[in-house]
Length: 552
Ligand code: SF4
Ligand code: SF3
Image (cartoon, rainbow, N blue to C red):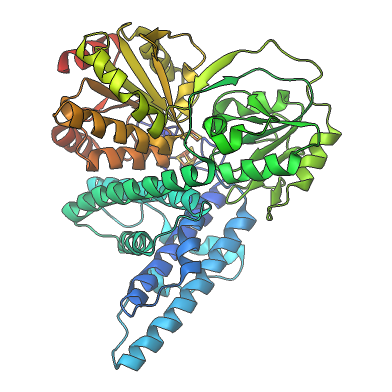
C-alpha cells in the first residue's frame, strides 16, 4: 500500500506515507490497494467518456457513477473491501459500455478508434485476489518519477477527489451539469496518463480549483433550493430526554428523509459533525423533533457515539472504526460510506434505524440546554453586509479572520483554538467546516450587535465566504487581497485540498494552512506556492497574528 492523501499520514525520516499493512486511519493495505485499482479503472472509464463525448455520446448514469465511486476512496469514507470490489467491477462494465458506444460511432464515421492509455485497456481480474495482484500498477507513486512531478500529480488527484465528493453531494440534490462532468472526465483521464509535464500539472491543479468553484456553487444552489437559505439560529447542544437518532456527515437529503420518517414516533433527531449547519435551514429546522446537535467533530466519534444512547447514521465522511467504541450494531452507513460488518442502507427506507432507536433507551433525562448560534451562510451574511461595512468604516471592526476547515486529533490543532481565543476584541471570526468545533462553544460576544463568531456552515460553504469577500471587495472598491481579511485553514482530507485549490485559483493570497503541510508537497512545490500565492504554514499564534494584522 501507499497512501499519503491526508494530514495524519505517517511521516518518517525514511519517507512519508502510509505504506505498511495499515494506514493511520485504520485502512488496511488490501483496502488501500483496491482503492488504487478502482481509481485506475475510473480513469479508464473517463478516458472513454472523453472520446465518446467527441461524438456527442453522454451517458448520464456513468457521469454520476465516476465521481461517486471516486468519493469512496476519500479519507475516512469506505473501509469495506467487498463494496470496493463491486465498484471496480461496475467501473469495468461501464468502461466496456462506453468503449462499445465509442467504437460504433467511430465505425459509423469511418474513423479509426484512438489508442488510449493503459487505464482504458487493463483487463481487470474477476476476483478480489486477482484484483489485488494487479493493484501495484495502479499505485499512486507508480513509476520512477521525480518527486516534484509526483507531488503535483498527487495535488491534482487529491484535489479532484475532493471535487468529486462535492459533485456527489450536489447530485443528490439534483444538481448535475454535463459540462462539469465532461471537464471532470477530461482531468480524470489526463491524470491516468501519468504526465511528467510540470506546467500542465500545475495548470491542471488550478483548473480543478475552478471546476470546484462551479461545483460548490451547484451544491449551494441545491441546498438552498431544497431547504431554503440558512438563517441565524440558536442551537441546543445538550441532550433532551427521549429516544434518539444521531445523523453525521454532510448529506442533508438523508437528514430530511430521517426527519420525515420519524415524525410522530417519539424520536428526537440530533446532528453531529458536519451536519450541524443543517439546523439553520428553514425546511429542516421546522421539524420540532430535530432537537439540536450532539457531540463535536469526527475524531471524537468513538467516545461520543459510544455514549449516545440511540442509533447513528453516517451519511458521508468521516467514519472511523466503530468496533473501538462497541457501537457497531447501532451505527448505519449510507451512500458511499462503508465499514465491514456495519449495516449499509441501500434504499431511502430508514426503518432499521428507527427500529434500532426505538429499541434503545434514549436519553433518560434532560440536560440544561447550552445554545450556540449558527446559520451565517450567503444570504444572512449579505443581509448583514451593510451593518458590517458601517462598523468597518467607523473603526469598530478592524479585521476579519476566516478560521475554518477540518478537525483532527493532533495536539498541534490547539493552535486553532488558541488563535480564535487570541484575536483582538475588535475583530470578527468567520468559520466553516468541522474545525470550528475547536472553539464554537466559546463565548465571543458581539460588536454593535454583530456576533464576533459567524458560523458559515459546512466546508463546502467556503462558497458563501468567497461571495462575502467578493461583495466586500466591491463595496470597498479594492482587491480581495486588500481587504482586512486573513484566512487560516486547518486541513485534514481531500475536500480541504480542493477548497484550497479553489481559493488559490481565484487569486486569494497569503492563506495560512496547518497544522502540518501536506506530506505529498515537496519543498520545491511548497516554495512555488509560497512565491506565487504567499501560501504559508501556520507558525505560532503570536507570530501569525502579528503578521496578519500587519499585512492588513
Ligand atoms: Fe494514511 Fe491518511 Fe491514507 Fe489513511 S487516508 S492510509 S491515514 S494517508
Ligand atoms: Fe470534517 Fe471529515 Fe474535513 Fe467537511 S468531516 S470538513 S474532516
